[in-house]
Length: 180
Image 1 (cartoon, one colour):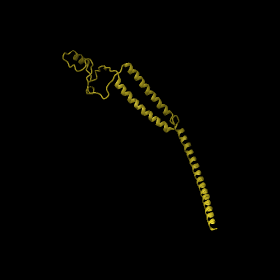
Image 2 (cartoon, one colour):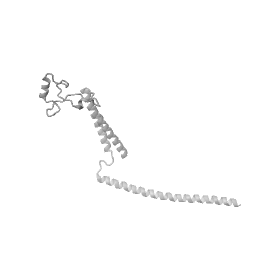
Image 3 (cartoon, rainbow, N blue to C red):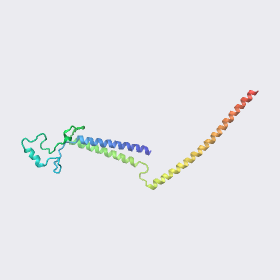
Image 4 (cartoon, one colour):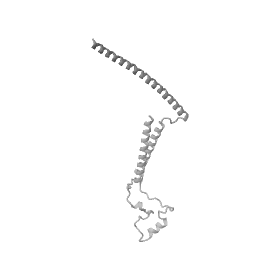
């Protein structure tokens, strides 16, 4: 029974990992696009003064979106293997809640399986006593098996004697029948 529970537990863990991957993939590909607030301590964003100077300077480089405050790096200019396909904030929030509920439900399923494992909720002494009782049962069963094995050998000997006796009587009757 516990091996069946262990198999179910392994299956649930595999499903949980798949759900984690799917959740992260969905969240990273479908999030609504919102520009981050500029962080003065972040070297990869324009400081507010430089951004204002860039937008006021005529003939400034217009290849970057104005007012975004973001300098695209090589990872932003290359085409992604998993392109972004943003959804509306409401749809995203609903999906996010549903994905979270699914993860919680799978976690609860795993907790239930763990609680059904033998030995959970018992102390070490109780488990040791249970093991001693089971070992005693095994010894008793082994003795019974040995006794039945001896009994079977005795029956086989008796059956062999009966068969041999019948064989001799048949042989005797044939030999006696041929002499007359």
